[in-house]
Image 1 (cartoon, rainbow, N blue to C red):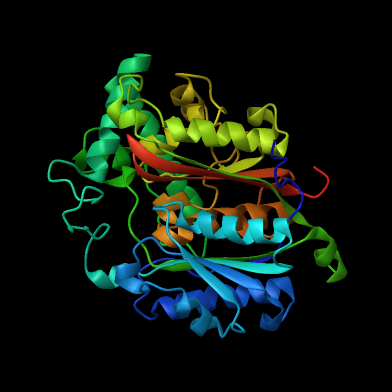
Image 2: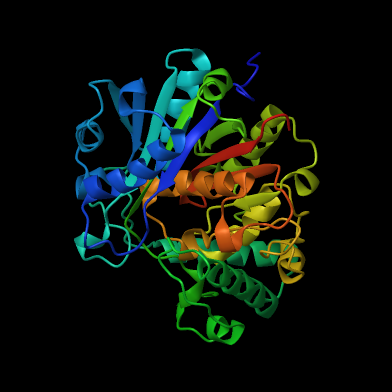
Length: 401
């Protein structure tokens, strides 16, 4: 049986570019911006990096089909560089490659980068792939807001929640994320909104209004990882350790069978159970200090609370309204603004989430820093639609926890 990677890998340094409409930079420039912060934080030279991974969601728009752009932009020393893509989990996938390389002994120090440069396409949402293949993301009768609105309808039906109560709960999610993003100098959207604004915004796909949908951003995020022994030899004393890193991918059951009722994310439940077992977490509601989850739509965040086991079945609406996930709540969620306000450059989002948990664990999050010392930070990505997706769950924590 696999023993997992708990405490085998330490985060040596991390960096994140400012997210937004970055007309001033191409993808290379964004990667350099994130990398410069990460390598300064790590306190090493680029020549000490043994291998690297690059996560990109839409390579045709901004990177191309190889990993050369990362090696070229950072002037890496002709090391192995691998480009990975796994929808919205692409950034976490690059982190997984680097972490597994170190845990296996294949590399002493490895780098993970995630980047996306989408605003230059001129398209308001994600680019549409229309190759005509059976794996195409384009659907003439579907849209991202539409499919997640169906998730909301299924959740309401299963748990007997009124439209008004659910609408108010997802509005609270949105208001909370905007308040958090306003405190983050690297966030794309830094303007607070009121509940009335969220409730009365133009409808996109009932019950999702304009402020319940995340936008598309340019950005990059980076992590440098190593063994705890090497980290200590380099003078690092406060170590953030990788406690768990799990991935679950749909096999068609949700879309092709009759067992799924459309009200939850099957892969998230599987990935989170595996991650908790790997990290030794038995009660996530009590043990997880803060979370970054895939809030592509505010309903996604709400439903994910139950899939991660921090809210009981049918109780996420109550927990949201009780402020459990607010910045000053028991388990803050999206304390940096989340996808909703920090932004969502597809390939960078997973690493951006880990970056916030890393800063919080080290007490370096500035105005948004938690007053109580965090111990475990969880990040979650969901790529695809509710009925066909990939979920990743990463847990980082303080050494000794």
